Length: 300
Image 1 (cartoon, rainbow, N blue to C red):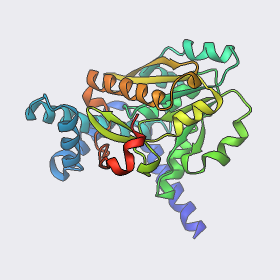
Image 2: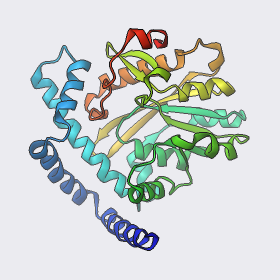
Image 3: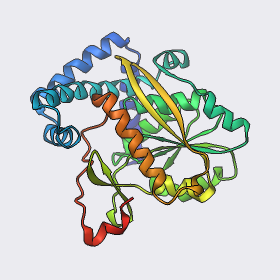
Image 4: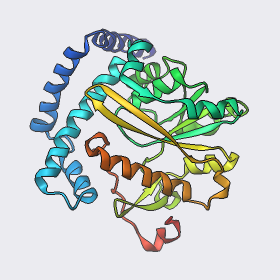
C-alpha cells in the first residue's frame, strides 16, 4: 500500500510541478477554461455562493450579486492555479506578485516578542503564507487544516513549506506547537474559520447575521499575551496582490474575552466590502443556526 501511495504521489506531484513551469499567460488561459466549466456548466456551490452574497449584501440587486459571483469564481480558480505555481515559483517572482510592508511586524521581532497574525479567507492566502515566511524576520508557524485526501495533503504541505514556513495541524496543535513554544515566532491563523462545535465557539454578527467563529486564535493570544496583527489582501490585478498588516492589539489580556475576535470580524467585513469578489464565498459561513437556548452566553 505504501509503495502504491508513493508512486501516486510522485506521479501527481510530477504532473503538478511540470504544470507549474508553464508561463502565467498559459495557466490563466487554462484557468479561464475551468472557470467556465465550474461556474457556467457545473455550477459548483453556486446556490451557497448566491445565498451568502444575499446575506452579506442585501442592498445590492440580484444582477450586482451575480456580477460579484462571476468574478469570485474567476478568483477561486485563479487561486488554485496560482497555488500550483508555488511549487516552482522563485522568491523574486513571488515578491513581485505579492507585495507587503513587513516593517511593523519586524519591529516586534527586534523587541524580542512573538506575535500572531490573523487573516481572513482572502485570495491569495497561499501566496501570503509563502511571502510571510520569505520576508519576515520571524520563523513563521502556519496553522492549517489537513486535507482529507492524504496524497494532496502531502503535496500541499510540500509547497507551503518551500520557504521554511512551519506547518502546524489544527487537529494536533498542542503537540506540534510545543517544540516552538519557547522561541520567538509569528503564528499565522486564517482566523475566520467556521467553528465545528458551536457550543465552543464565539458567536458574533457577521454582516448582520450571527455566525460561529473558532476561539483558538484569541485564546492562544490571551494565554501568552501575544501581540495580534490583522492582515488583509487586496487584488491589484490578475495574479498580483498587496497585503496590509495592522496591529490589532499589543496587550490581548487588557481586552475583555471575545474582543479580539470581534475586532477581527469587523476588520474582515471592511476588507470584504472593499473587494467583495476577493473573499471565499463558497464555504458555508452561516451553515449553523443560532440557538438562544444553547448559544446565548457565547455571543460576543
